[in-house]
Length: 305
Length: 215
Image (cartoon, rainbow over all chains, first blue to last red; front, side, top):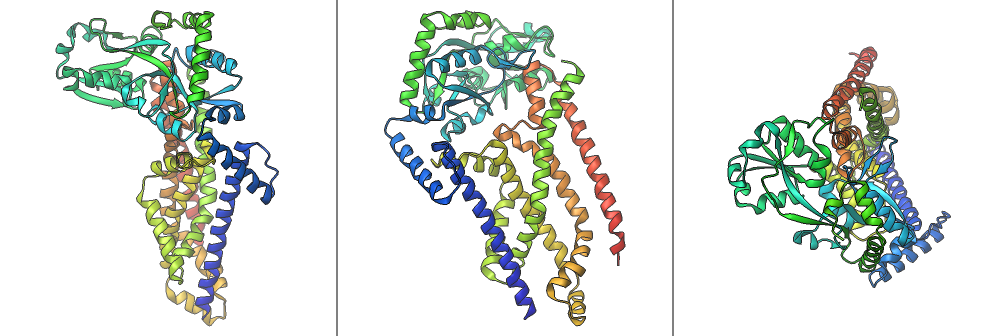
């Protein structure tokens, strides 16, 4: 008998725990809902439910053509980036600088919203974008046919290329892609470097090592666990040479890989946002601002507008 | 970048690691006990529900759970937006509660039935028997397996980087990416080692204190 009472008691505790948890999370939900809809979270139940229906209304109208309203109502646009020179990196004072950083700020100023730079894991950029954790991908994003299935691209503003990096002592061994047969090649998984490797018949037959970041590909070559690495030209130029741990590596000039274009990634349905960004890019290109930024960060040699 | 500057930056990342660790531990310890009562419940629906939940959580990678909690609502088109850190902590608390609950259950079931009967003979209530007789013996018995989980938790915090939370590993990777230095990536091993040394010391201390309850 007492056992049963005990069990019931514990069951009740358990249920209360569950309800408490459920209550917490639903509170959080409605709080977040009201925050994102109109920031009028005064806390009472009825008002919360009101604001949540508001947000439902706005999201249903967003299905029509007000993707820009979603961003402009927030007043800020969350830009997904990874940190690398010369696109987005920290200067001596710890300030975020770089070509993409300044470019993003310039465009956002024209659009009247504040950019919020959010570091992301690059291989999850599509999920980040689709789940609205970020609003734009703006970080030396290469335009590819596969990616067009998942996102819309703005105008291209830089022409990048993929280059092969190698330890200087081995540089003479490789004169063309045919001489690379049987080697191991490191690149960032899901990057344009991977596409470049797989597009070439000889390279596709090599041992291919997919890393989680471009810098890991450098590390592979440095550690000798890969013979060659495929990286963005901009990144490779900035990260090997004097003063780095990669001073004994060089870009292989003798081999040309496919060239590519950089653009801003936008959600497929965000057509209005995309048009606004393209307009802003046009304006910045016409008044020369964009070229100035490109010169400042040494990417004017691949400037595309 | 000097050794000191690197250490300072890594310390920031370590702070995040400690925060995930601390909050998870503090919340999971009691939540795990509640789940134990659920999984030992005499009421079949509660027992069945909790056991299924524990099976799902223990049967899927923590990394997947973090991804699901953070991206899931947005992908379903809901207006819920959890901060990254919150999503990580929720995932960790749920995951570790499940593991803790099974350790508790093992501990509780290891106490001989005779002790419950003795308590009843002495006229103690079920509640008194559990909290005054059983619980402390359980705590003593579960210290070693709990120590295992707690030390694993320290290292599991590195999974937070999957949704770009800058914990210790991510902080080191950032230096590797931005400064072209490789050694910080291995230097963080020292942070983990020192912290688990501290935890091991504390756990040993706890075990010694519990000697009082030895039979």
